[in-house]
Amino acid sequence: MQYNDLRSPLKDFVDETNALLETEKGEAGLLTRVGESMQKLVARDDWLATEFARPHPEFYQQHLLYADPDDRFSIVSFVWGPGQQTPIHDHTVWGVIGMLRGAEIAQNYEIAADGTPNPVGEEVRLTPGVVEFVSPSIGDVHKVKNALDNQVSISIHAYGANIGAVKRHVFPVDGGAPKEFISGYSNTGSQDLSG
Image (tube, rainbow, N blue to C red):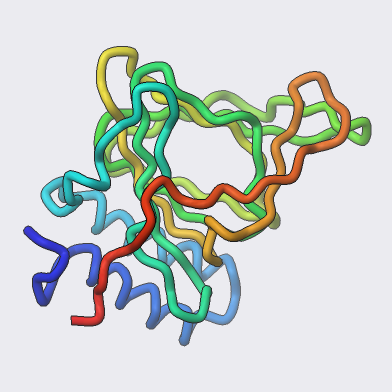
């Protein structure tokens, strides 16, 4: 299936998210409904183009799949090679994460007054079809890694902004001031889903 097909799972997700942003007034309802739509998207593993599923030998990849023209939301694929992981980081906007292929392990954190990140709860293992949420209102700081040491894992993320342009933070393991960053994207463009 190609992205330029009139109806693709990704285009359906974009259309549903657009409609939800028009009708859902509260974040809790929006997350629930976008999560339901994300579950439909990651229930199939036949739509992600190869160029958005390639790992890098050293770094995880964040490929832009779609950016709303008004920056209300964006959709990315995260591609994890064996052993790859993020630092402890935040998002500053809502996010819905759906596991497409392989598995991830996420650990949530709270940041102490001195800047030290403290784990909250148990690690969460995401397997295909599982959906998770992040938001400043429900918990926004975590660390994520590929749960598999012998294969690539891929998750699909929807965020409540153009996540590649949002100022975010990395939190040093031993505390202190967070480091600000803007992630950008591993690729240079997104798909035209206007068809």
